[in-house]
Length: 282
View (cartoon, rainbow, N blue to C red):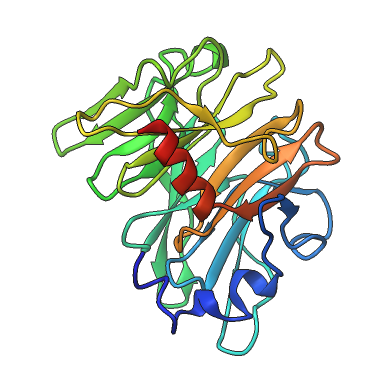
């Protein structure tokens, strides 16, 4: 992250973040009208560590993958490319730690994967399919994965924020327990690569409206009581999911909408807020 924040970094140039004017403490729609010609843009986005690649999900509705897909854009040294399709009916692109692969969400709680090739990206293939739920898989530097999961993958009211470890011999999944998990759906999350903090969608209503809260991992590896990201982000009743912090640590992205028609990806300055909330929590 230090390299990404250096003065000579692409992140510091006018072309970073698709050339969009960065927001301050008030969330703004990201790249309004630029990303798709029809449908909505939602779920988690992803930037490469150098900031020169951008990935996002488009679709027709929140509740299924019909008409959805994942697009990517790249900066060639002069300008950003037009959106290019990387996978159909798959969503929430998430980089592997080495950035040689992307994890994608698919129907039936299946984790899909695409790998880099000499010409871009290969075809999507099933990477992880289990009898239990797998939602929002995110890798970390330690090799742990964080995910929303439930014994009954179709019962969304029973999903818990969980940690998943994989080895050649077995895959083990364990709920993170309280205070992160509450009654209802616990699935939408962002985990810092070093596992120092987690941003969760919480206080879920029966119709899945939620707020964004943050929890910090303590030295004993337990988690602090989650605290709100504040009224600028949690501004009334709405769906909030797809949370994501850019690799340079400066901006938080998330999907906000009271319905599918007004759903959009928002971004907001986050580094100062993160520092403030950490001082309150620890």
